[in-house]
Image 1 (cartoon, helix red, strand yellow):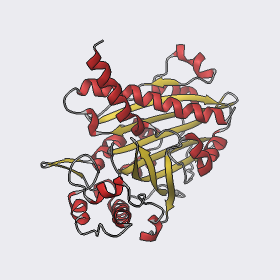
Image 2 (image 1 turned 120 degrees about the vertical axis):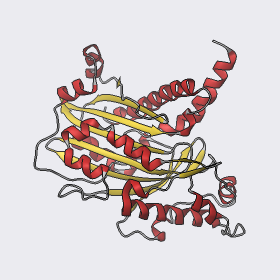
Image 3 (image 1 turned 90 degrees about the vertical axis):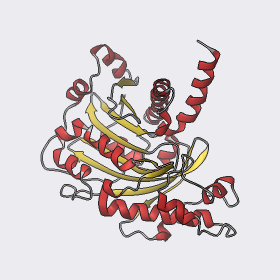
Image 4 (image 1 turned 45 degrees about the vertical axis):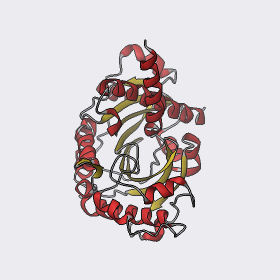
Length: 346
């Protein structure tokens, strides 16, 4: 193996690492029930996701077992994993819902809060850059490209911000977050503005998330009403559904970044299914979608999840190497998060 290859691999590993720390941690909140018993049992799901018989011993011993989640797009990195935990699904979900427990799983979160149904600018006041920081100055001076994920119109609004005002960058970003949340609430995936990469090129997070949803075959099979509502949001969720939105400020690649999330949890008997969608990320990656199933198994639960992340960082020259490194890093970060979750239930 050449020195150049090793250097490039190490560099890409560091760059891609933070973008894939979005496993079970992704704040699971909201709850609804349906009348039809559609959740598969653990053995059926083991077969459906393709976990091999020889891996069952490892799974039963509490080890993390990976399974393939097929990539459906050039910019997509996907990873699937399962783990056995000695706790009921309801206890696992209850643990995850508590913010103090979430930060024990992912320590990169700087701040986060729930976005209420009738949100105003004040509901984003907890988000902000450190006054006088390079990140704040760079944001106000941002131009189309890969440094920040903003639309053409959003880049234009930064030109009218007053850089002499101490919190100008934070105020400008809060307005953008509110407007993006409002657009998503009104029009769903179609309302997500593309990111202007310059030179007439764009990234399309709305299209990426549509692809991720279309690829969620097991959700479509076992929960067709939920699947249709998720795909066609803001179509009404199944009766009794509750949805939760979050904003988050999180360290990604050593930089604070704003994230907007939409999440739903469905309880069916003793089992749980979670849908989580990051419909805005401030930089480094474009979008993310996570599907988690938590089912009774032996004296505890099996937790399955399929994580799909879309990023421009794996395209272009050396894309095969970048994708390989990205997949490796994704599985590594997933394992780290699941080990933290497993430790909480020992």
